[in-house]
Image (cartoon, rainbow, N blue to C red; front, side):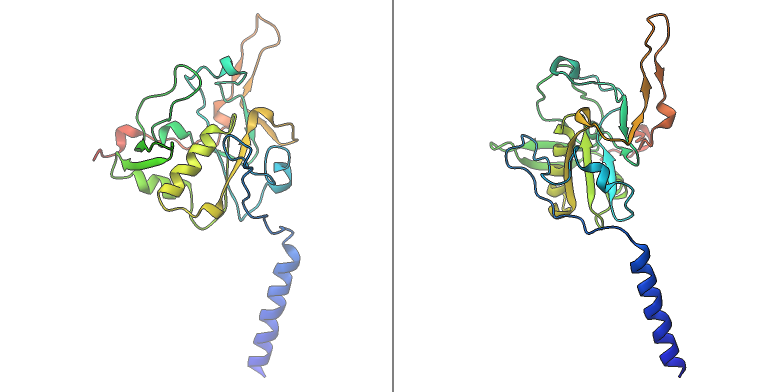
Amino acid sequence: MKKRNSIVVICLAVLAFAGCSNQKKLPASSPDPTSMFGVEKKINMETIDNYLNRSDVVYRDMRMLFDPADYGAIGGNADLSATIEGFKIVPYPYLATLTELPVKGAYSGDALFSLTWDSDGKIATATPNYDESMLVLEDLFPKDKPIFLMCGGGGYAGMTKALLIKLGWDEKNLYNIGGNWSYKGKHAYELIKYAENPNDHNIFATWRADYAYIDFSRLHKK
């Protein structure tokens, strides 16, 4: 009788959990072949509001808080003025060396990995610069969950996806959801408030950011 009661309790618990969970199954990763950076066809800036606050997803914004690259020259914003609720900021330029960008002034400082590329523009080698390089990456990008990657225009997110695939992550779990500069949804999270009056100051609310700080001076070079 005890065994039967235990089975009933377990079944009820499973049913209760299923009833409480309103998370729909994620659509499979399906990059748009016409997108320069391989942005997802189904989960992107137009649809992301339908996929926020999920316990089974990791959310990453790959931009720098203040990027030295002149993204204003191509209609973007080098300052991370807003992100989306629930996204942790993990700047790609701190993860690996950059490919050539269509703007001047790109970051060229410390990074966890040094990359080389083949004639097709794909990553040929990814060499760790620090003993902790892979540990940092595995902590920030868990391998057991889908990861939504975004940036300003889609480039840093695409570079992050390529890096992770090269280092052994499952491509099916990596979603480049595109560029936040085009986001029109209801869950923007403001980090910079620009002054409307020229006599007032801009407010740089960096304290609001969920930011992955990598102190390279504390890492151990190989």
